[in-house]
Image 1 (cartoon, helix red, strand yellow):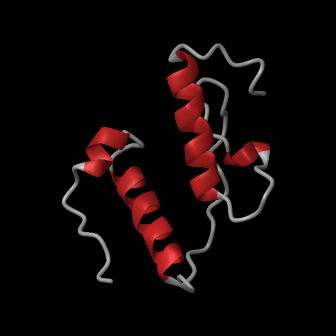
Image 2 (tube, rainbow, N blue to C red):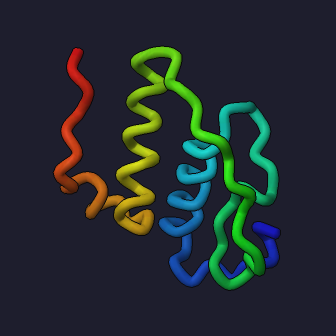
Length: 88
């Protein structure tokens, strides 16, 4: 699937796609349905149940994921969004 994709954004798009997939998955393997490629994906991914973050790292991961989703996965917009970091 990754080899068949045209990658109009070149290495930057590939890097962002991999980073996004890592944020979505908890395990060491990224299944194909967790990789978001707009021109290839024909159906929306299965909805994953939200779970309670177990530790600060999980809270931060959830906050980053939420900010990216809220900003259509545009990293610069997610970084400058009004979401405040968790208290330490």
